Image (cartoon, rainbow, N blue to C red):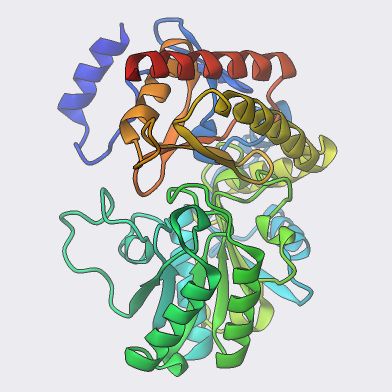
Length: 427
């Protein structure tokens, strides 16, 4: 069996709308390395899109899941609850930023977490409108894609989006945006189209994920917190991609001097198993009546077991410190490459949530072509990279935080070689 054979089978069997970036069919994985069905080895700088922050098949996570397998795999927490669910909720209530009493609900995906955060905000405020940001990504469900500030590929062909969702520009300084302009847009919105007394929540990623790995300025977070306090609006931090040590903090909001009212999380929480959570102010989280939140698979025992183990690993192995160390090494290498690579116009990101943005060689416009060429050249040499950004001209680096030093160094060498190869082809 080959990758090509499976690609043909997949094309015949799987819906076209499920896009894939590579035709590499994984057979096994360990920490930061993956082997395909042909025996080829790859270094994984995607981590399942920031899911396996603790590495593929971390021994402690696997042991916790195996132990839970020996007890039970599913009862539905709403029918027969279990202690590990309660324990994980207690831990997140303590760990999520915010000096106030919190409560938590577990669901299954990041999009589900966002949906439930919106439900909570609406139930608690009695309002319906939601404000989100251009370039933001919040999922592929109808509310999730309505909140998402990017049309292609997420909204094409699906008809009208959910009502009462409003988008404002995210202040990307590199592209001429400012916090002042963003806040002025909100004020104009409030004067022309939307009574602030109808706004239930504002949702923001502390670092935009699909949008291009742009960190939110501290000034913006302070301004949003003040705005929410003034108008009784719920501030929601979408930490689905930024959470669980990725940014050098357990949660990216720890890097700001204000706290959100509700936090959504998923991806890195399960260490490879599907689980997501919403944690927020206790009085907000209690606004929905019993039965209004949850789901059949919400807080599945295996995912909960993995989540508790992931929190242990992050603390025991100081993965926040590791993210900062590896991120500094990566940024330093990228900046050195940038000195001789005019296509690189920016290197950014906290912890190991790092991005490089590429333009044409003359710097005149974004170059998704050059960006994709770097990705393909890296893949040829055994390094898996992801692109992102509204213009598709950003490479995001999401290596597992547990990656071995020698494997990380090998990956950086491959990256530099791939960029050189793309430059030669672009000359």
